[in-house]
Image 1 (tube, rainbow, N blue to C red):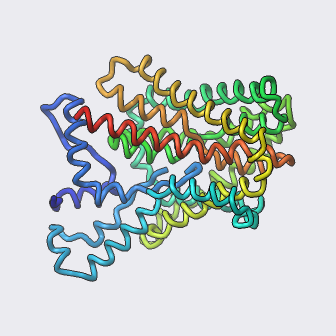
Image 2: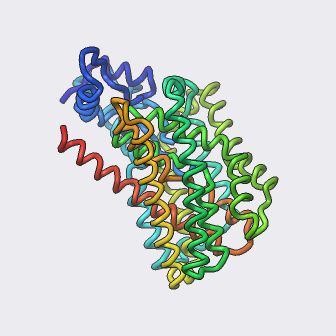
Length: 407
């Protein structure tokens, strides 16, 4: 079905924000259902314009296709060259949609043939994560957050999920790993460290796929947790881990400033003052981000393959699954209790479930490699990256099907 020129203009103006059509006479439920109908027609343009930047890394929004699109899409057929350019851009930007498959493939490859990743040593983690954070900054704008800030209660709930509920589960399952499973202390530390980091931008992409109208709110939640992680993560780590292994709080603050805050700020400034340069590099960011994420996931598994495949590694896998499952359920259930009177409570429940259940495991991995000598500390965050992606996108498919059947 064709898309009219007004939609193309709207996409260009708002950087392809997945906006709702105006439904003055519809109830919130009916409006949401109608918006799904519209977004399905628009997905070829808008959804591919959302970038997922793993690790810490959001989805970001930009509209490259509007650069090539005339007032009516039918005229694209008159210019094969333009059509070819649009197809290439769509392929490049769509690379992020293969992230779950790439993460799974890199996991299998690392376990089957470790030398494929062992060259990616610890010294590369900080620059790799810095690149992912830079990509977030390049594709972000202060305008993205203005609308979402009108829901402070929901934002506060998301923050509590990130830095209260999740660390609590991390402490519980980390303690269980030592007391019941008899695992080494470094593995318990890895579980706790994973629970202390900020939210993952993968949650933004998952939210967009399930409830597009909630994507800006999800981005604000994750951005706030990422920005404050420079202070919160080191002190949570000291609180939960300090009695088990020494924690360098000052070093963590400095490291997070270098690999999170500085790259994001650089990207924001570049986007603000050199927009043409940002537009030029936009198409290559998704495939590079996916490639870097695959390296960051596969390398620690390959380097510690014997530990991962050992009985203790299987125990860590089960504990990490339980940790994420508990966080997903808690985020969904507690949101339902706190916001039961809102007309959009179900989309909000799904959004906060993603926010609580998914975190920047790659940041935890970078901190584990930087500040803990024992390589076992890096195993839980490495496993968490894989489990988080698979569980998050499984929920996307489940909830999307339920919405379709209910429509």
